Amino acid sequence: MEFENLLRLVECVSESGLDSFYYEQNGTKIKLKKSAGTAAPKAKLSSAGQAEAEVQEQPKAVAEEEISGHVMQIKSPLVGVFYEAPKEGAQPFVSVGDKVKKGQILGIIEAMKLMNEIESECDGIVKEISVKNGDAVEYGQTLFVVLPKME
Image (cartoon, rainbow, N blue to C red; front, side, top):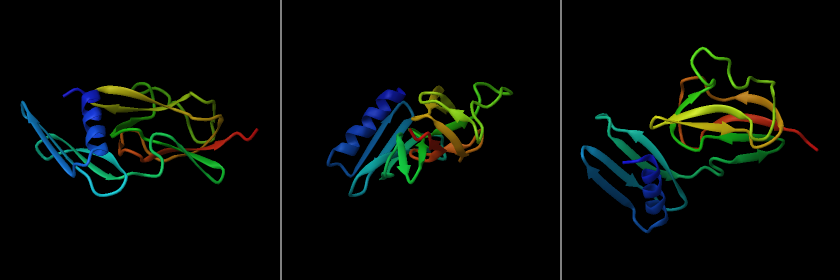
């Protein structure tokens, strides 16, 4: 199943009144479950390498910045593997203390063989990088903490 179709399926089940959903085709198995309340998908691989997604309580802000006090958290918009550089052996996109501009690439998340660029949502300074190169990241997990430039 294409990644985009999988995301659409998760969204449809999340927005529906269904509590669970199971799909199997050509050895691919997808199981979606949700509990009461607002939910967001969390994908994982089963022990047999089959794709599964569970719907769990949604973080306050996912795939968007969260301003708490004077810091902005840049969160993962999907489940995948985080990379700090464009290729192996290259310099990282950013380091702690670097000045960044809105739209600047901070890192990459690989999901289903697709490279997804993570961009800064504001001008500011990188205060913290919460993940390491090669780490598996979850949907809604904080990747970067940026101190926004105050106008």
